[in-house]
Image 1 (cartoon, rainbow, N blue to C red):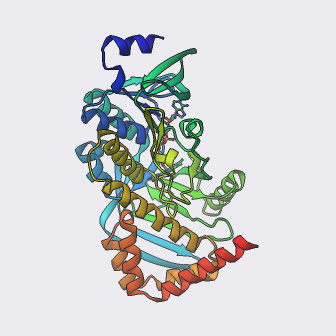
Image 2: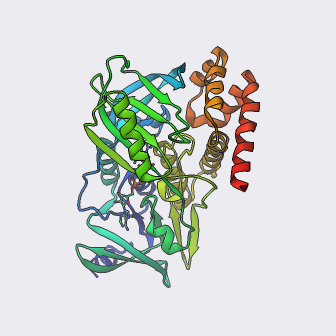
Length: 391
Ligand SMILES: Cc1cc2nc3c(=O)[nH]c(=O)nc-3n(C[C@H](O)[C@H](O)[C@H](O)COP(=O)(O)OP(=O)(O)OC[C@H]3O[C@@H](n4cnc5c(N)ncnc54)[C@H](O)[C@@H]3O)c2cc1C
């Protein structure tokens, strides 16, 4: 009962916002909410702040979201994409560089920002469940092996793809896919400012990528549908190219298929979901950092009763466009990828370079306007998808 006593003593019991999950979405939400004047406590099941290393690629939007504190986690900048399929290739230059970010540096920076703004943090504290009470929400936790009860007016589930907050508050489970990447020595012929993407439909309906962290190292990864097959495919891919894995990274990533409502009323309190827990992941590229921060901004605005819900609308539009792109490409066969890479002509490449992947509706519209044949290719992809879903 220690946590309860502490809350009662400082007399702000009724205002507490509990955020479950001390990672990207949780700490970002914590900073925004505490800066808005609410009392915030972050619960994290791990015993300390030692996030697993993960090499991430994010769009330039990341800098706008984090400001100067973005710099300490940025390892490299990407100015070009090279797309490969079946002996063909296309290049896309980026006007605004993508950023390569190290998660093990990002999470402590976000935690520091939240803590300096006044958020409290409880590590080794696992969320177990919640229930409504007279003034808000009872939160059951296990902290250093002991069961405790806490009280909150709002609970935010930032506890990842297998969110227990979502489950106990009655949200439906979300689908996930495996993502595996290996840290490798960067091949001599791969420029440090270039990300490589390979479409190999026999291996995966998604793609392989190589993102350079530095002139020496890069992360070579793949998204698949079955965990073991995905690792095997990556091992084969590495072997074919004579690359040695120096380190492995991986986890299951949510697949956004439909909008997950971010808020539920529970008695006199509110429960929210954010980040992977709400499947706020761009399903065409499986990027969840920038969209998770956008979700966090929307949750913070709702808790603080600020803003006009624009962030949420924009995020929803964004995620839906990526879902449309994924549905279109999910059943592409080799001939379609070959055609796609051929169709990425100069005009199309110009569009891709002007607009970032976090402005997908604008990007899609511009690409289709300049290269209408892609509409036919897209429709074909959708029809292939519908046919195979019906079978
Ligand atoms: C290998 C890999 C590469 C990726 N690459 C990219 C990329 O290039 N670009 C990109 O944008 N995204 C990428 N992603 C996705 C991105 O990492 C995730 O979308 C993002 O980290 C999700 O953050 P989150 O805070 O929502 O959830 P998580 O990072 O999963 O954090 C959830 C937190 O909740 C805690 N927790 C869970 N259950 C409980 C509980 N019961 N009680 C208390 N705490 C709990 C966990 O310990 C964890 O700290 C990648 C993912 C992987 C696995």
